[in-house]
Amino acid sequence: MTIDTSRLSDASEDFATILARFACSLHIEAMPADAIEEAKNNVFDTLSCAVAGSTAKGIGELREIAVEWGGAPQATILVSGEKVPAHHAAWVNGAMAHARDYDDTHDSAVLHAGVSVVPAALAAAEWRFGSKGTDFLAGVVAGLETICRLGVATKIGIVDSGYMYTSLFGYFAATVAAGRVLGLSEAEMVNALGIVYSQVAGNHQVTRDGALTKRMQPGFAAKAALVSVQLAMRGIRGTQNTFEGLDGFFRVYLQNKVDLGALRDGLGERFEMRGLSYKPYPCCRFNHTSIEAVLSLAESKQIHPSLVERIRVGVTRQAFEAVCTPVDVRKAPKTLVHAQFSIPYTVAVALVDGCVGLTHFTDAAIRREDILQIAKRVEPYIDEQIERDWSRSVSPSNLQIEMMDGTSFATRIDLPLGHPDRPMSAADSDWKARDCFYHAAMPLGSDSSTLLRSLVKDVETLEDVRAIVKAITFAG
Image (cartoon, rainbow, N blue to C red):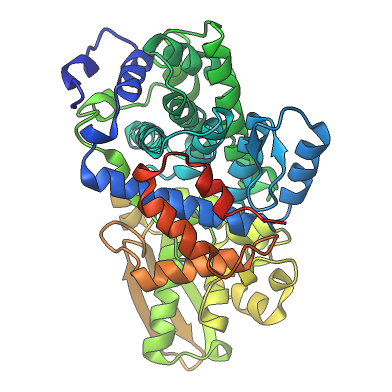
């Protein structure tokens, strides 16, 4: 079976119609092998991050509210195992997956792809009393491709727009994923996209204020997706010209700064989701090149933190705004979100401890005086050359360490580790998974990460993807 891509390029149709046609016609037999492999990588990484997120600040409160509300036992809150309505499970699981900021990124689109898509697809599968692995996988691919294409086609950055694209685009992507799992018709999918358009949100102010709602926004997107597809299945009509209408998403939210060619061209043939990266460090992707740079210099030059006078870090304007300002807040973060979004803090962590891991993003860690003393010496700035060449992408880092004896060392990192052109090793990926499972809220068993990897590796053979849910849920 192949996708009739000639039907996906009618310029007279709103992108909602094109997208619905693509998603509803997507079958595993027509997908390139590397797109299937990428989807599997994403499911494993996203669910591993959700396991780690089960102990993150704010997640317990979400879980308590969902359980308190009660309702039909349609889907599972991962790790703890409570059965709740499907949209509530998607909500909590989406927040869990994003809470540690360990989840995937698309370094050109500057967003996280899986944290709304995978929880929505999984909740839809459970709501349906189980789905075949082939339908679940098709839903994930459709959702990931939706959010990645929206991201690379958008030509206005998150600082200028004021939106976080992870959640903003995640509403549509999660809806596509859940709708494909549930087998919506093209007309129903168009309606579901129109219904979810009435709910899309996700602001950048959450990172400026260090708000816990930063980690919850992708969960809101996954929740809205489950609501929207169920309304569409009951015949509710949503907007039809959702993206390109006079008051459509592109004008209202993105100031029409969208490359329609990048959005539409090759849909179903060329998969933008192949550009996804996976994080070696649990913090904002804008920090990663700077972390790598300081780790490289510290090791090669045998730099002792106490002898450092100053660390200058050059990045793009977008990165500077996102993870370097206000300077006093980033040098002495008072909240975990501010620490996750701080080049001064994460560079100091890397220099002092020689690594950056989940244990560095706790209330105790962000008060460590040895780290804060080094963070005070980190001076970020906008590097004009990097800004000119990389302004819309995840930023390179031009880092210089100046020593108290007058010597200095410098290096530049362009592509962060985990990028498709610089993938993490299998050993690094396994270490990350073990780190995630170590932080689970409930004991899942010593082989749970291995079992999850095995199930995801052969997901297309599963008759019921609820086996994946069982693998990462406390048995009691």
